[in-house]
Amino acid sequence: MDNKHLEEIAKKVRVDVIKAVYHAGSGHPGGSLSAADLVTALYFDEMNIDPQDPKKPDRDKLILSKGHANPAQYAALGERGYFDVEDLMTLRKLGSPFQGHPNMYKVPGIEMSTGSLGQGFSAGVGMALANKLDKNPGRIYVILGDGELQEGIVWEAAMSASHYHLDNLCAIVDWNGLQIDGANDDVMTVRPIDEKFRAFGWNTCVIDGHDFNAIKAALLAARETQGRPTAIIAKTVKGKGVSFMENQAGWHGKAPKEDQAKQAVEELGGEW
Picture (cartoon, rainbow, N blue to C red):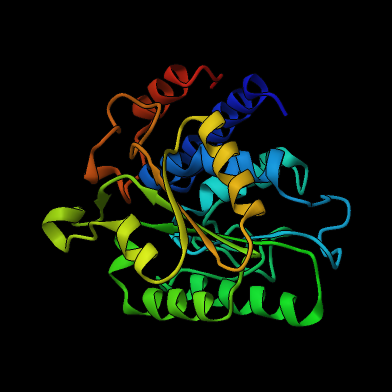
């Protein structure tokens, strides 16, 4: 898909995120907005998937290890046709399948229930290894948060993936520099992210996570890399696209009020 269409879809995803979190009265808009371009590129350009056959055996799988950013994943799946995107406005409501963290038994297209940071990445390593053993061509993609890299389980998984030469695995780090308690560098620095993954034997690159040309090129390089997994370190902006949310740690897990939500949707080019 050409970049213009991807950009338009990413705008819709961001608008959906704002509306859903507003209606829920809670949620995580900041990290959802920073990951919007990444999930859009994956679901609409990169991955071998079929909304009409969500469980097809050879499909590619995306695991959102930073599960709190699931409004972005839900929105992308809705725009892709897995369900009516309007249903997402029931986010976090009693009885809604759209829970506060992804539930693989409730929403089509969700491949792993996540939320406990680091565990989604470990599950992705297991899926990639299973596909290798089964000679299944499906690729595994995992999106991690930068603060999530503070979890030791992440590096156990990284070591395993390299040991088993999982070239069907691609990890994408949403590096927006902020987490719930503030800047990564103040809480527990994760730098240098690229050098850490390289030291664990991964093919690694650093890109602008809002540039579709860069995202596409990195995903292509990952597919062409043989014998080792790939880590894409995507530099992003927390709250991307909404002026008062950008680079503000306070919007990690807070819903906008009505006037704020309307302003955000307007800035994103959507309709309230």
